[in-house]
Image (tube, rainbow, N blue to C red; front, side, top):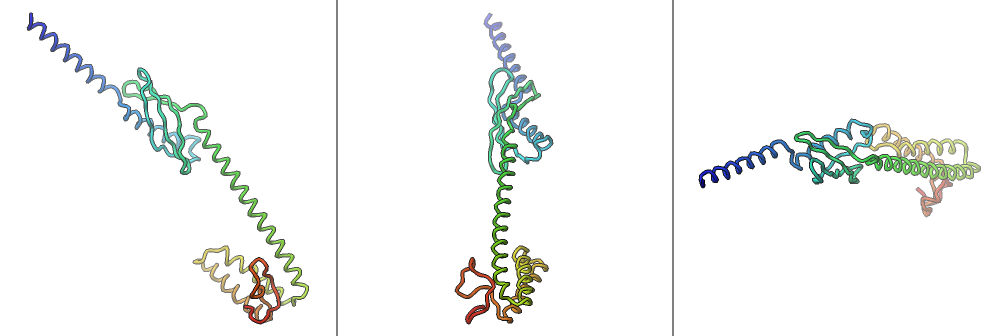
Length: 217
């Protein structure tokens, strides 16, 4: 009798052990589910309509809810800022299905729109500053032109064009270097005719073309 009972206990243990082995052999762990979902989500971000935002999945965390249902949180990077995306996951044996909540990636479009608006505002502000500077320079040129000889006026306009090319170009480009050299040579011509870009004591904002005084450069 004892032998039969011992045999039954041994059989039960073997059966239980085989059941545990079957479960782990046929069910993914939470880490495996997380890796599977992370790879699938990254592929979606790279191949769907979301590809233009160039988002990257940093990690996926998985929590078991009930049965074969899991809750996931994906951490997604967008231009250096991290966002949390809730996920619903079903793991059936070795198959995994997942989905993000509707509107989960709306933040990408919102940030893109905001960035576009900011860039437009910055461009508009820069355009306004340039327009104001051009208007101020035009007024200054008009005032100076009343007394400036025509040949000097031509040289100052040439100098202005060359100065813009010199300052806006890249220093290692031959065209930029040539513009800077021509600008300096043109200024020497203007200086030789008795005109200077402001007096020595003038601050940058007040400078305009004036007849040179002793000490002006």
